[in-house]
Image (cartoon, rainbow, N blue to C red; front, side):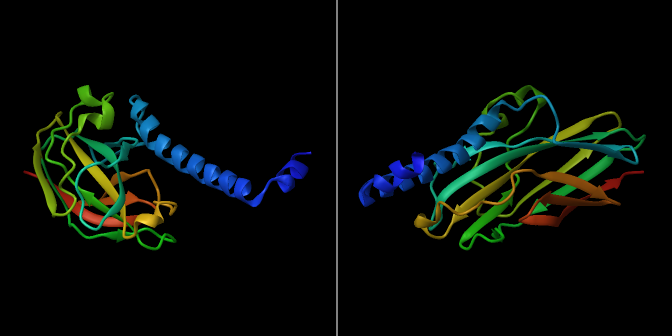
Length: 209
C-alpha cells in the first residue's frame, strides 16, 4: 500500500519528500551536537600510566556562528582533558596544535582544525553548554599550553575541533568522528579523533626532579 501511494505521487511531490528527508537527516546531525550538551557524568576514556592519570570527556558543541573567511557550514566540538599527578614529583606539560587544516576521509572539501582555547576549564563547568567555553575564535592560529602540575594536583584544559567546508553546498558531507582522547606514550602526548586523526603528536609530559 505504501509503495502504491509513493508511485502515485507527482514528481514535484516526490522532490519535496526527498528534500524533507535530507532536512531531517541534517536536523538529526545538528541535534546530536546540541543534545551532547547534557553529557556531564562519565568520561569517554580514563586510564593511568606510571602515576599519571588522564581523563577525556565526551563532546559538546554545535553550529559555529562567528565570522569565517571562505569557510562554509562551520561547526565545532568542545572536549576537555583532566590530567592528575599521582606521582611524587612535579610534572611539566607542553601541548601545541598548528593551524593546519586536516582533511576528513571520504568527504572532499571538508576539513577540521584543532586548537587550544585560552579559557580555563574547571569541573564546575562540566554541566554547562560547551563546558562553559566562550572563546572559539582561535582556530586560524597556532595555539599552545604549558602547565606545571605538582603532586596530588590536576590540570584541566579544553581542546576544540573546528569543522568547515570549502563550498557552501557541501553541507551533506560527513564530518568524521566525534570522539577524541589524549593518550600518553612514554613522555609523548598523542591526540586521537578517528578517522580524521589516528595519531597526532601534540606535546609531552616531563617529570621535574
